Image 1: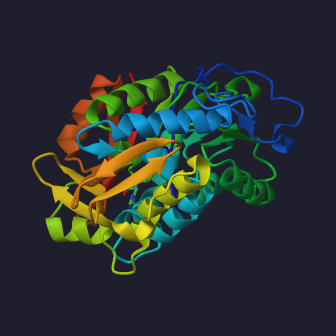
Image 2 (image 1 turned 30 degrees about the horizontal axis):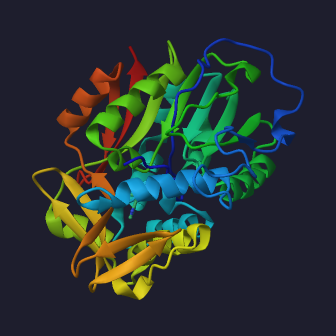
Length: 363
Ligand code: AVI
């Protein structure tokens, strides 16, 4: 399950990138450039099976049908973040029950000096899944002589809007926007910046949306992207009691339900699917054995849905798994980070140990 999340009011996405550690002259005017695309989705090309589909829709269809063939059925959570999904996720982060965003921000505010000291002078900050880049501003405000900032996000529209705001607020910091699925391969234009080191910023605990094997691969790629002397500043949600976790993913306002159901709306729009949003209900359960929240859309009745010419049958009560959100112990995350080629240099938590922000050094 590959997540590609905008860290709402700050979040994340990923893929391998070139080392950013070599100092190179900046390009003429990086701050003026439009978002790059990672070249994975050439527009106008035909889908393999259906000539009416664009290449990106054909990839979406293939991913959806692959998930519909699994037991239990599943959908890749990276598709949650279309423009409407990104807006809904921003609303989730403002919910009082959704503790991760406010807690992470409070940790950052409390320990900003130490975090900025870890980044050091002439740091190139690479943010994976930049979303609205709200927490990033805390860093950009305090960083010592930053070499630059590269925002990487899957939602081109969201990225362009937040980069416009950031460039206006920080005209002295060279910036680049990269519209890319950070779970795929893409090249970071790090050679454009005169950086002493590169540090990947991956807040929001989006690492928890990867399954363990994928999390290891992704962290390993981030270590490669940061390169020797570089690091990773990462938000990591911690294991806690069931009521707190389940309340965060079953909000009374129904925003999380709307966020997950928006994926079905997207499939109706982009693939001509016939999902009846009222015929599925949101479910989020904390699986303590696996240390993760499991979010599903559960079919309220026996039904058949058409997806671009395919029929998909659902039994009453049958779930579509949409997203996992793993919660970590500090020891478990340390082991994962070390296997990926990092050393945990610093861990900051809140008084209730709900959440952590960690600085990992590339070993
Ligand atoms: C982006 N990610 C860290 C969120 C989480 O908490 O796992 C995604 C989310 N899905 C529903 N609510 C929040």
